[in-house]
Amino acid sequence: MGRSKEADGSACSARVAVVGAGPAGLYAVESLLESASGLGVDVFDRLPTPYGLVRYGIAPDNQRMKSVTRVLRNAFDHENQVRFIGNVCFGVDISRMDLLKHYDAIIYATGAQAERRLGIPGEDLPGSYGAKEFVDWYNGHPDAADRNFLLHVKQVAVVGAGNVALDVARMLIRSPDEIASTDVPDRVLDAFRNSQITDVHLIARRGLVQAKFTPVELRGIGDLVNADVVIRPEEVLLTDDDEIRIGSDRELRTNVTMLREWARRPLQGKARRLHIRFLRRPARILGENRVEGVLLESNEQLAGEQVRGTGSFETLKVDMIFRSVGYQALRLPDVPFDEARSIIPHNRGRVLDEIGQLTDREYVTGWAKRGPSGTVGTNRSDSAETVCSLLADLAARGSYNGSDPEQILTLLDNRRVDHTNWANWLRLDDHETQLGRRQGRPRVKIPDLRSMLELSHRSNTPGSVESPD
Ligand code: NAP
Image (cartoon, rainbow, N blue to C red; front, side, top):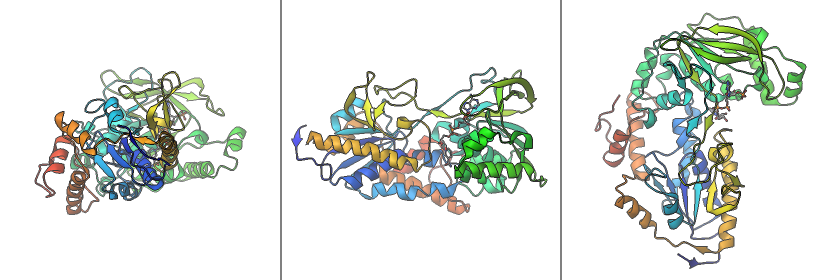
């Protein structure tokens, strides 16, 4: 400790730990490298894979968006400065105190690991699932490796009017051939090939101007080869308040125009249908032993954030329901947390303790900082703000920890943590892309952790480890 040096934020030999290798964490690394030379950065992740929600959140049929990994991976081109330390769980394998001891600063970039609930009767009936469970499954997340979704039902509801609900609805309604050109695990592809789904009902509790879809994502459902979009014209009428809200908001106007056009468009008799229902609140999930339907209450068309029922109900018969009403960050062990807002409290990225005082050398970025909002790119400016605070503090402090970078690896070894590095990830990456090449797909994901680790450590020859699919 205590190696002293003039620190001006542009040239320093401090060491920074980034917890979470998703877009927020990797944009923070990019920002650190751009703003200061000589820094050492270790990026920890609980999985042996980088990219977080880019790999496990963005829908498989949106490979164009997943190509942002080409930018994010640049962080690891700086071999002597930036290390990936995967398969290390913060709070289990390594603690906050460990990181404070070995690094000059910690950046938490752990995202939002849980999801909100509806809080209505029937929510836990078999056949009612959180969207995250489904997203994890189709994206080959190890947390869902033991999961299987049998899509042997005809009618499905998706609750929520955000981009995740749209992703889930689109994946459910796509043709198997379209899914077959993505990177889903083989087992997932089989489930989609055997899908009996004919109708997906997307349920929005407010009106079309309050839906949180972004235009690019919404446009994606308008020309699905296998599905008509069905919208009731009476549910997309605009009030004067709606017109005021749209005003000069071009994105919102684009959405509204698209939705109203689809409501007028004659059905083309495609095999499947995506129904978008506005102003409908799920009041109860119905069924004896499993989901048989959902009771919907009509809501009033109000301006702003308000939601008010009309007392008029209808039953929608569905066999499966996905709740997609927003993600939520969870408290990290020993790290301050604002329970009411489900974020790590901060001031411009500097972590605050429970009484609002600045903590020592701790920072936060991404969804753990601002809540689950924005697109991948939003994290760039978010992380830049956090890094700006961090570098200013380092410069003001003027002395660095001076810990030997090998010590943290020795500590993990002593704890028998099977940690992985960037080269290990590249082996797994290569294996998955080679598997994909054989099937004319961008990659085929390996979803179970044991196989992922074996492939990471051992070999890049496809087929050397039996895929559980
Ligand atoms: P979101 O955008 O916050 O949408 C959540 C939706 O759930 C809202 O429509 C909300 O309605 C609804 N909701 C909340 N509580 C409800 C309740 N009790 N009953 C019925 N509906 C309820 O969240 P998200 O879809 O999970 O997306 C998270 C973030 O990831 C967003 O920023 C999103 O844009 C981003 N994302 C981006 C992409 C992409 O760019 N391709 C893909 C996926 C996700 P109210 O508005 O009425 O509260």
